[in-house]
Structures are given as structure tokens and as C-alpha cells.
Image (cartoon, rainbow, N blue to C red):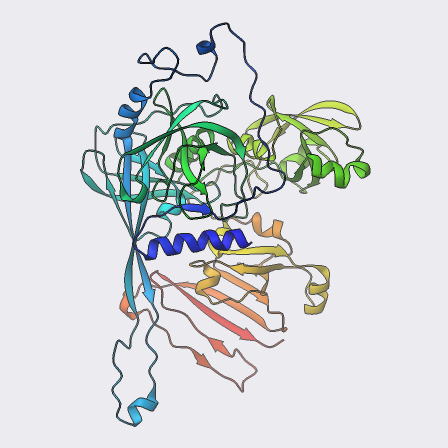
Amino acid sequence: MKKALLLLGMIAAGAASGGVVAWSILSPAEKNGTHVVTPQSGAVSDDPFSQAGTHFTSYQAEQYPDLTYAAENAVKAVVNIEVVQEIEVPERQYDPFFEFFGIPQQGRRGPSTQERRGGGSGVIISADGYIVTNNHVVDEATRLRVKLSDGRTFDAKVIGTDPTTDVALVKIEAEDLPTLPFGSSDSLRLGEWVLAIGSPYNLQSTITAGIVSAKARQLDVIPSEFRIESFIQTDAAVNPGNSGGALVNTRGELVGINTVIKTMTGSYVGYSFAVPETIVRKVVVDLKEYGVVQRALLGLAFRPIDQNFIDQMGEETGIEELGGVYVASVSEGGAASQAGIRKGDVILSVDGVELNEAATLQEQIGKHRPNDKVKLMIKRSGSMKQIEVTLRNKAGKTELLTRDDVDVMEVLGGKFATADERLCRRLEIRGGVEVLAIKANGILSKARVRPGFVITHINDKSVRSLSDMQRMTDKVRSIDGVYPDGRSASYVLVEWNLPSESRRVTRRHWRSSPKPICVSSCRWPSSIRIKASVCPT
């Protein structure tokens, strides 16, 4: 939790100071259980330059790779993205004390907005203006401005975002643009040379070089409950402003999107991390074709079988060998349950890819859509067994989502957990989802819901567990629940079309009435008003 707070603080501070957007991890130590993935085996040749993944250009020297071809061609497709956010500044409090004594109250009395500027990088992936970048670069942006390597600038619009992978797709209206083709992040090998291209500190078209130092890194840095992290780690110098820029192999192909730096200072000190091409490509195609990301799920909870697992649960489970993941639980009605996977199974591989890291399982499943089939090699009671699983979406269905379907948890904006039995007994409810924390700009934040609130119904449908909430895809219209002190609360979202300057609703209190004691809404730039009623039980 401490890391996450520091991370978000870094972003806010950088943007507020007119700087650039980047993610950083302010911790000198790796999380327990993070290991280097064993490189894929390949054919051995007498010629060291013929091995897969070692891509040297025709310009190479006798012993060293020549990176000029890749750099000169790739840099043309990497852009600078300027981000403008309109931030509402709270209204100045009016104090009648000063007015009574005739003391003038200087400054504004009404609410106002201020512009906050930041930026990052992006990569042109099609000649008609589609650009891939990070979600955290464009998140909550009011305006986007894209500057090409040749100096031309264009307004851009967001096509779609995916907070779970930190990938976003934007578009500019232009033709015949230089593009960067996708390569293969799966074929990258440890020690292979790569280039990082972006706009650190607003220095457009900056190129640095390094090697792939690890794959399938999981850092728990993406602020999403359902994050997919399988980062490519390199020692190419990356700094704030590189976010959304290209990680390129020596063939001049896109193999990743630079996203995170590991630092104690806020600047590069040796390691950087990129979202691999396998994830980026799938997210981009989904956003372009469907408008939403088609997330496929196995429907199970798992733990990597590392030394910590052996020490803690080896005796209980009878597992003595490292490798694979342990199935800790299976969601009822999910893909794994339907395929016959049980608690206690050990998954060794997905479609032939060995699971030496937990992140590898996330990456392999993240490449698929609902209704896709994958083959899992599992170990059960000492016997090996191959099981074919038909993947499902978060609602437990094989159908693809549409633009009208929503991620309820993302829309609400918070961190949630199934309410425990003790809490349910105390509040006299059959079940619910407790709000542990609230994120900015979500429905909960705008409705001024406080942490501790237990959601019991969404759109008049019962919510008894976190899985119930996850399966919901309808647009949120109402929320019902109970606060820890026993007060019931209802929040109703009402569409309205008043001009922005009229979107102010006063808060009224009826302290002596047993009826609703508060009806309120807040001023925020959207076409939604939230009515809140809080009643004693």
C-alpha cells in the first residue's frame, strides 16, 4: 500500500509542476517471489549470430550490433503527447463575520477550474493516425495534443483505455504517417539489445539502448484490482515522459510500451519496464474493433509454487517441487470450474508455455478473448492431465462485450472486498461488498460515499459478494447499502442536460426528520447527477 501511495504522489507532483507523466516505484527492494523467467530453449548453432532472438542488422560490425537502422526508422513513428487536464478548484468559503464588520473578502467566491499540463509519448501503429500509449498518460485528460517527429501537431481523441494493462489507444486525423510494425515479445531473449524511444523531460525523439534483463516481471504497480502485469525489464535509460513510448528490437519492430521505472529518486537509476507486445497488440485490436477490451478469465485464484510456497504449504499440500501455480480456489460457474479444474490442482503450462512465473499465466490468458480455448497441463494427485478450458468473461459467459457493457468496479472507482460474516450479522444483512477505499473521479467519489459503506444492491439487483459485482456489466443507475453505524443509504444517478454553469445543487438537511436526512449532488463536469438519501434503520 505504501508503494502505491508514493507512486500516485509522484504522478500528481509531476503533473502539477508542469512536468511530465511517468510511473515510478520508490522502493529499493524487489517484492518477494519475483524471479527471472527461464529463457526459452532453442537450437544451438556454431554461429552465435544465427540463434533466435539475436537480431543483427546488415550494418553490423564484426562483433557488435549496429542499432542505427532500427533507431533511424523507429524514431519517426514515436510521438510526443501533451495532456491538458481541467481541475476544479473548490469555491472560496464565504465568512459572514468579515461582512458584519465591513471587512472586504478578496478573491473568488464561486468555484473555478484550472489547467494542469503533463505529457508522455506514443507510438503510431497505423498510417491513418492510430497511436498506442499508456492509460496513465491520457487518463482524465480534457485535451490531447500530439506532436510528430517532423514537428507537425494534431489534436487527438481517446478511442479507448484499459486500466488493467495500462494501455490506451488514441487517434489523430492524418494520413500517410510513418508507422512502427509489431514484433514479437515472446521471441525476446535475455541479453538481447533493445532501444527505448520517447520524450523524457519533453526532449522529443530521445533514443537510449540497453539489454533485456528479465521477462514476466510482476510489480503490483498498476492501480487496478484486475491488473495484468508481465513486464519486460531492460536497462535502457527511461525517465518521466518516456511513458507510452516504444521499446524496439534491433529489427526496428515494436516489442513493448515503456511504462514504469524503478527508482529511489524519481529518475532513472538502472531499470525500466515495458508492457510486452503480446498484451499491447491484443488490447489495441479489441479497442479498435469492439470499443472495449475483451477480457478472458480462467475463474480461479492461484499461488506461484516458489520456495515461499514450499516453506509455508509444502507439507500441507504434499508439493515438494518448484514450478507451476497452485489452484487455491475455483469460482463457481467460471471457466475453470466448468472444465473440471479443482482446488489443489497444479497448473504447469498453458498451451505448452511453462509457468515459471505467476505473471506468465496472466500474460498467456490475457492474450485471449472469451470463448477462446486453451490447453492446461495440470498435475493432480501425482498424475499429469491435459484439460481444455473454454475461457469466459467476468460475467461468466462466453459472449463478447459491447460498448454498452461496463466494468462496474472501474466505474464505481474504489477498492472492494466481500463483507465478512461478522459485519453482515452486525448490520443484519445477508451479504454485501464493503468499500475499502475510494478513487478519485469514480461514481463513489462523486456521490461522496465514505469508506466502510457496504453495497447490498446495484440497479436493484442483490450484491452479496465481490463475484456478484464482477459479473455485472449493466450501466450503473442506482446503489443501495448500509454504513457501519447502521444507516441505510441510496444513491440514484439521474441524467440531465443543463449547461455546466447551472450544474449546482444545494445540500439540504432535515435533522429532525426520520425520513431522508440528506439529498445532495455535487458540481462536476458531466451529464449525471447523483441523488443521495440516507435514512436511519
